[in-house]
Image 1 (spheres, rainbow, N blue to C red):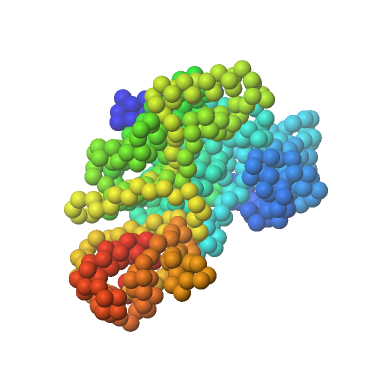
Image 2 (cartoon, one colour):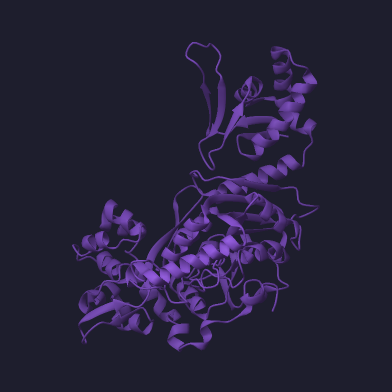
Length: 531
């Protein structure tokens, strides 16, 4: 069955042709569609809808957006109503909005269908919406339009088993967490509609995208044709790593089907990998190193079970320990739900609600809880996994941490900088660190707290303003060291002065500061300016 067992199935290829291949776009027609959609950007939609409707749409509530969009006769309004909100529009309005591509072109591509007599109304068959890539500097790096299946908020019904997901919270999280260092070959595992492949095209020469669903690959091919990204694409049908066995990539990205789905609960191709429990994530962690080039990085999302009497990191640590290729690892747990919260979240995501089907919802809810209870699962973690194949020697990084707070700026840029900093620190002994001159990063501040009647502060915190916004509790020596790192004196010189000032032995001060410097550099508080 291959490395990932049941994942080696092909699902939607046996259904009707229009189900397996819902959309298509000839290269000669793509330019006309791009020209028609050009005014329809993320900013234009937000300006049309306003803040209230935009926030409601993010909660999958379409009524405020429909009310706002129907007030305007503009092209942006027509396209938003038709493709994002599931509204029927007049044939003449659709024709005006689609320009030279036309309603006939959109019908042939699988985007729309007539909802009445000829010349009457037009409805969308798929979801199509603008999106944008944001660079490390926060500026927009690219504009795209992405097609996928329509969601439950628009259809008002349960999702189809072979539903192809569009741009959601998970895909946005992964896109923000991915390091955008210019690279050669990128692998997008479980590409779905192709959104991660589009992002990868902004910094890669070649993108290989895999999926077990022919329907998903049809959407990915359409989105490739529509947006014409600069990188070459190779779309392959198959189970996760199986289509690329024996190949090596510089970056692997994946929003895998990580949702834990017990027997008796609704199963969907886009989120259920076919293995029990959190097996899909375990398999990916253990095997992805086999397709990484030396120095290559894999970044993916995942769920993991937290079982009674165990820390969440125990399970991840065991997977990493049994990896087929030893890897550097950095896992950030972003959320933790108890078993009931988890069941409710993913049943709602699929449109399985007590309002729509009370008995079906109850049966699925019970199936979730029975499965979790039988296996001692008390909670389920969600997070971002970053793995790297060392270029030389054994792994030097093993970091499993929780961070549920806000992240300022793209997480991917923070991770990339941190890996560079880790390698710099790992390659130097304490004496080399103490011989280095450092600067405090420009987003770092110092906060002091204490009783109003006391002259000296009781607490000193060193905080970051960007990235993970970490804070470090500092004693007098560490606070004095950081405040003196202005690029003038080497760390050892500052250490010696502090030892004399605080009446501490020179050796003890140097040892303590060297240990602290490693963490401060890795976390981005200090930046080396001289070796």
